[in-house]
Image (cartoon, rainbow, N blue to C red; front, side):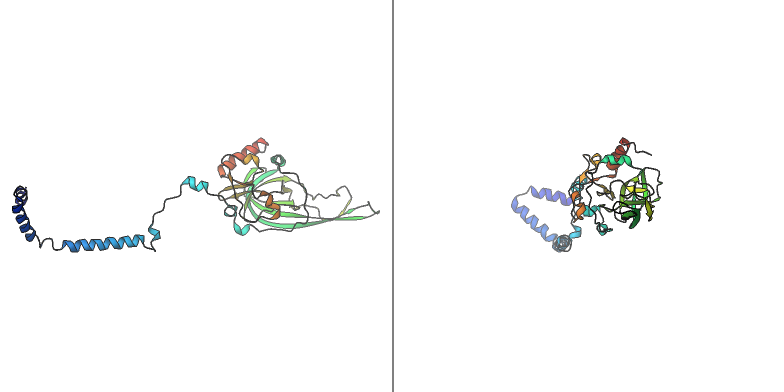
Length: 295
């Protein structure tokens, strides 16, 4: 212990008057030592005030920490159709259709007629018109009947082949009679169950004698059930109508359709679902196996 410390301890044991006198003397002797302390304190206060203003000022929002969104909160967010499907492609390939048919409700059992089930990107969509002339003796001998029909010609790149003899990476032509068809859009990706329609277009008067006209199809493949929105692959999973009952599980999410759908699509406005890639793969594989559709 140094001498100065010993003196201070000794002073605390003396009468108050003596202690006051000693303290006064020490205050005078240390005045020069402490002369810069107030200035130092003032400088520190100025720095603190400036930093506080910088952090909390009106232009400092980037410095305010925000809590990260948890996985649970992200999953609970409402799924919007417009966020799953590219807005630029929502109105593509809208051909006029003059015929409205009464069609049977969709059933997953239609899949059993699949010649192939492929998944891939739509490369192009176009129309083709067929005109055929038959003999028609119903009203007069040697009469003629002219029939026309339109088909949709779709080219799709087979990124994945769920079943069938099609090779992955191959460009497949699909030809489907238009009628009341829900049209796939170029640049989007779908899962399409395809049936074999044969090499020739089928007309109502097929029993009559064929005279002229091209009846050779562009492709034997046709979409099995073209009357509803097809299963679509998006960045967040597989989008599909609730009519695919085997695909709906406890993990399936509802999708809010927040756009104006075409008239023929309105039936599905509150029936769209989304599965993750894992859930869809598991459920769709089970369905194909159940119907003996395996490679």
